[in-house]
Length: 230
Image (cartoon, rainbow, N blue to C red; front, side, top):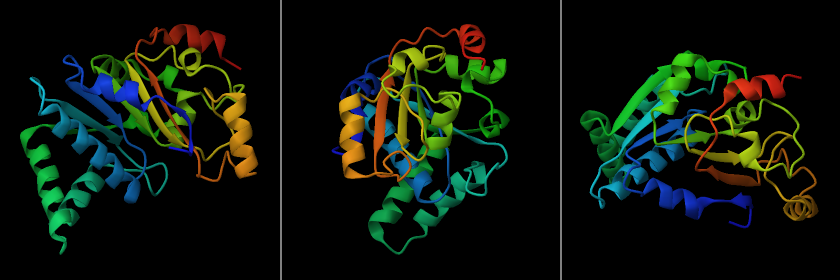
């Protein structure tokens, strides 16, 4: 928690457990250990909602083709689950089997999309991809590359409120990011100064991160496309 420069995790957790939050989208970034962490989050959402009156479906938005060699696709999700099921560690095997049951029951849905492998800002998502997100009750954006698209790769003043930058998004939004590029938003001057004092390369070292939640975005991509076209 000391490495989080903005932390909306409590509000985000409450939203994920709210009665109406039954369709959750998770925009995945990289395969490997990062994908394991993403699937652990998807597992936690499904399992936590079993204690409520309504179960949750988590849609894993993966890339239809890789832009970078590490990009996660449908086959990476399935091979990760299969590898965990075949593990010699009993706890890992049990988790892998639970994850496999999520896929078999429909609690997890893998949805490949070409839109996630593009370089354009997220306010320029194709209408079909945007409509998919708009139908979800909460969307989780994961990874530094996806976050950069969320910001249009613009170098916003770091203390620009996240709610202003992501106002165009079509659904309630949770952004989870480890800082690996020299841009960002929603970071107070005090937190930026603290990070800089600890690590001169704080914006790119991967040591710091943000958890940013926007429960009610305005959903107006046309405005963003006009106002931020520079």
